[in-house]
Image (tube, rainbow, N blue to C red; front, side, top):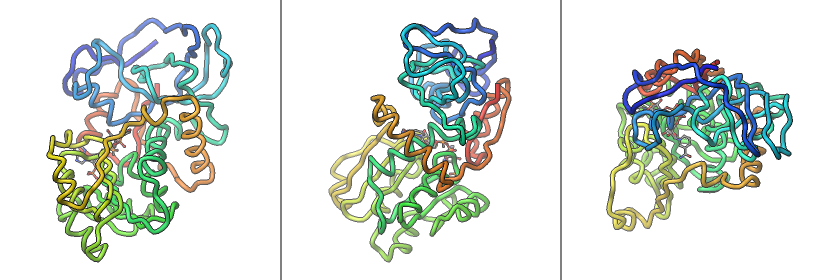
Length: 323
Ligand code: NDP
């Protein structure tokens, strides 16, 4: 079968497609024939080495398709079941991928493989960020950075549905227009406006209850300065680089703020938590409370181009590889 591999850390040029032996599922594992594989910003961190992985390696952690083989002792799935997965092992950019049965989720008939690959990792992230890390309720004001991106588009729609006032930032006028069409109440062009100043203006000097920041380095200061006293900064990504080390006293000086750096794996580490998270996500997708824009498709052989486009801020919504 064909699989995307890297032999060394580096730019997108280290990505190539190889013919590899089709994997056999071990005990409590299922093999998924991928109909679509999700591309996520975290895949670029694995490629560059920002997040260390053993090399050589495959890439990608998200896919959707049909179970085409099961290992010994599998009880939750059978051959032919529609499934999605997003929590490893790395190597999802491939025609077939083996995952532990307790890391796969059954995919409802109403959700296509394409939409699943575009939204399972990103949507489960949005779900834990909005329902667990900081529980967004009616009346809250939330700031969402990179709101036209894959996670961002889901966050905007879901936060609005929960009754929050949504202030969304994006890197260009065109992206801001897109974010408005998703229902954001206020928008900020992050590349030319002073984010914290604008958030203060919009909130009549009060600040936001929570900032969801997947951009990291470039927005860290502005995010802290956008919060009201006792507000929470949720840094969940490093699209512009990792947020710098800093003195916790700053949190006190800026209003006894809360800061967290969460990751999906910790919020879905048990079968129960994974199922609960997926159930909530599939419910908002099926009700069309959250709509997933048609993803941009790439062939497996064009995975390097997908990474280039994602890192160059050229994309909106989700990217999907079609094996
Ligand atoms: P996106 O589609 O959001 O792409 C990243 C976006 O970040 C870009 O489109 C761009 O939007 C913005 N950005 C700002 N500065 C830069 C820069 N210097 N280089 C590149 N992009 C920049 O990606 P995803 O939806 O896949 O992921 C969004 C974030 O969420 C990532 O940081 C990712 O790591 C994180 N994440 C974290 C998870 C967790 O559990 N902690 C799980 C899933 C994702 P614009 O031009 O509008 O600024």
